Amino acid sequence: MTDLPADGQLIEAVPTAYSGTTFRSRLEADWARTLDTQSIRWQYEPEQITLPSGVHYLPDFWLPEIGTWLEVKGPATPRKEKAVELGKARACRCDGPCACAWPGGEMVLLGWVAERTHGDINVARSRSGYASWAAAHGPSAYFALCPWCGLSQWITLRRPWKCRACRRGLESEELYQPHDRVLHFGSGSGWSPADTVAIRREIADQMAEAEAADSEDLRWEDLYEE
Ligand SMILES: [Zn+2]
Ligand SMILES: [Zn+2]
Image (cartoon, rainbow, N blue to C red; front, side, top):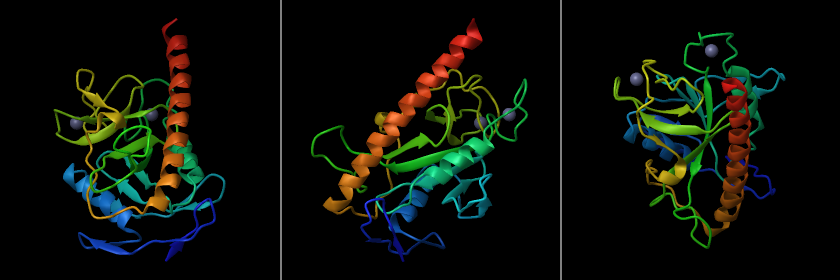
């Protein structure tokens, strides 16, 4: 099976079995392994979704306990427009207190493998790397551990900060960003040097978008507090 990356180069995705599931690629299997290390329950490609635009979208993972979709990004994965559209469609639109099944609505997360260090020649290496992430739509996502129900999860800084599973407060908990390197990426796949250019480009794109989303969110907070 092959995917067509943005630069038109064909990269073969190797079907990989893990935990009773056959994944399209080793990268996806490694994400499942990584989720397992955090005891985050996952379902692989459980549902094909018809987006508001009419386009069909098969997200990689649904994390049922924390109401989160995870789209794995790598050098061979398609562009992220579908994940962004899903994120917009499933975000909270409640007037007043959020009555969504999960606080803030369903989250759509883009996940990739981070560089070990910023800049320079150091490249993404899943064996020794860390998982990285960004919300596909809306403010930045932070990784947190709920002390009440014990579930690891991603939340945004849109207040109130609540556990997505048990809805109890996470106001006094540590929140982590990708550069805090808290989420070890499960080993198993290896990158070729050719992959790293595409990955670095993706990381730069994601960081720029996350920053743009953050500043937009700050403006909202200003409005809210005045
Ligand atoms: Zn809501
Ligand atoms: Zn909880």
